[in-house]
View (cartoon, rainbow, N blue to C red):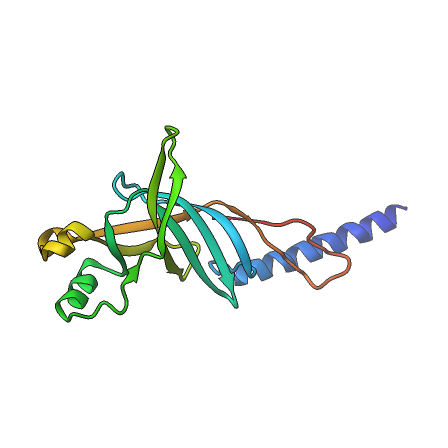
Length: 179
């Protein structure tokens, strides 16, 4: 009985070492299985608040459908303020992300409000997303000094994911990715 326990303990330790070595080899690489996930997205801004976020992963590519708390943005531009200004000056809005429509939501105070929905690409779950919001008011006025607002989005949350070791004796039955 003691020999069996000792062998089992050695096997378990060996698998742990192998698993940890494999995990460290992939450190910094975060992947999520195809599917739809509810997520939280922090911005740190009062005038640019994400009230709802749905992540969709398909064929290894991710995008986030975000509902902003208001409807005052003409578009979102991935990248920097300089990128957005260069596009504007070149009269090329082809990379700008326009609203997919508007949707009602209930605010924290219980009021029914309307916000705009945007779908943005997500290249990484463990890095901030940098983009620029384009004010509709100042866009319509042509006021480039007040038109662009740099923003940083951070995906937060816990996601149920599937993990497979390929081993019969070392199965993962439940796995959660925390971002």
